[in-house]
Length: 417
Image (tube, rainbow, N blue to C red; front, side, top):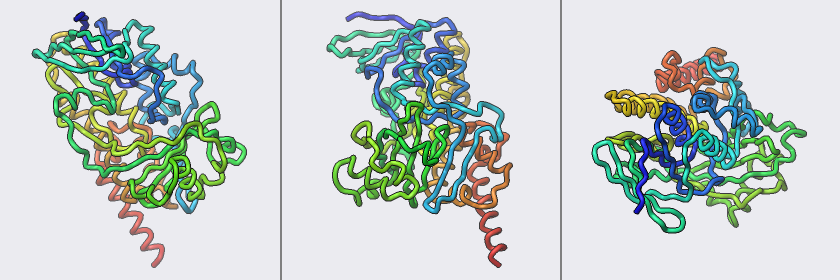
């Protein structure tokens, strides 16, 4: 069996893996990516957040992304069943940083990053599955299997696991544990959105989130080619009221919502609607001797605030710098400098995910009295700036949300008195 020697083995060629690989490669280390799938391949997580522009920029990917002509994204619009609207514009956010990003078909986006990192000198092997990893201290020997059944081994001084939902190292070494979030299901497709401009349903340069009913919401993510990604997210029991094929179920769900029924009526579905469910997960630890977990491998919460790619790229950026320091002989406190830092962002997002599903966030979004400074601070969270400790809606997210709810309820009592 042949053996290849590298400094760093990266598992997964998605945004997390490619960002980490690019940054480590720039530091002069030999990096190899192995990817189970053949690119381009379909995946959801199509609406990015401005915060992820920072790691994409450091990785050197922005020129490659800009050349693709992806749909620019400048904000997020929320609307409820009563057609009340909360429209966030990232240019109004509290935290200084990027005020735009993109909405992308992930097959094209991820393939663009993977081709870019190859152009930078990082070898990417597709259709290559990790079957065994043996650690000796921080060194490792990984066995991989190619599509033709052939095997080889890769020696590495460190492993970055950015395998996403594949969760290679957590599954292999028993690090997975259940999330405290209830299981949910998504039914989604891409739609030829012929009415999105002439009927003024929404601007194409922002994501539309529809608060359909308690615990049920819809995403509409327009792309630059006239296609819109649309999906319903709910507890699995919600979909039991719709019969037939996945397409018939999704069309019936769309017809039940006054905000999107007319917009998508009779429109062409680009593929048979797909199902994704029970996605929330976490790990006991995001690191170990000789490896670090990045992106969805660490913890995936929920798609409601499009946090996936942001958490993936930011964690990869942070991990890459720590890997470089360790390879240079420095002692790295992975708990303090990596896991604890990652969890600041994860926990901030978790507050808003929980507040969305229990209805607190809708009370804020659709309240007629919305002070601009508070809107700006929440806007920063929705832009992905969930590590800004100067923002009380990050640093004390749960307490800040609850205080605002109490203030809104008190004002309503005074007004109605």
